[in-house]
Image 1 (cartoon, one colour):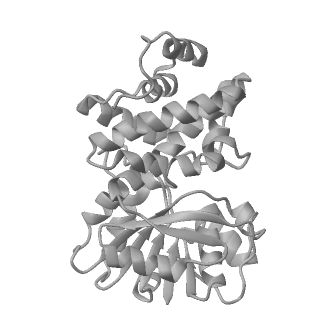
Image 2: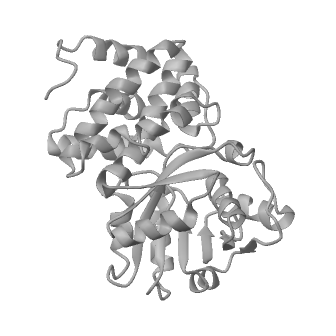
Length: 322
């Protein structure tokens, strides 16, 4: 299968490397002026992995789109709308777009597949998402993990899972597009919270964070029309180890550096996703105490310790409401 992976950052380059490894004809595409593209084009390697000669590298977007049966997109989620404006200039009929990024569009509160759907004829172009735990640093050392692929079209997600499954990544077929996307996006939000706990020396609280945050996100998923059980799957709870505990997690590191007063220079998708979820939850009347306090810290200048104290001072309630 001919696959073009658009976006050659940490995760995009790993996806290209992985799909080539399992036998597909892969192109890694990026912007000609982007540092990560220049590094791959010049040296065929980055800080995480090396590309074999079989992977084509190109900055020609038209060529990258036209050659592909499957287009994998792995870029900053807040730039997806702008990117789709460029991609949709070309014929996408008969192609499948797979989104390998996790976030909610801040300006609209929309899931990423909803953004893509505005630019395509859904009868002619398929959309799927590929999410779940794992880091490039582990995959290139042959440490396996499990992930999930979801789509509104059953035949599309089943086909992709069969094509992408291997001994390195065991894929599951998603059953709830809304929950899969929201859960994957929200785990980055909770990753920031975990980093803040680490920065305060409160690492032992991350177990409680995992339990209560999953419950909170499940309620948000339900309010958005998804299955609340999705929060307990690979898209969200299953990705917590990679996001709440890993030294490689950008969102966790952002939270830790935030508490310590340092600036984290790399992309942390959870920041703007916090803003997006906060706004939608307020509009729909969804109770989200953890997200609300994180929003106050990130955007209104509230100190982290008072935010934590406010969470602890809330009225006593049952752990589960059935």
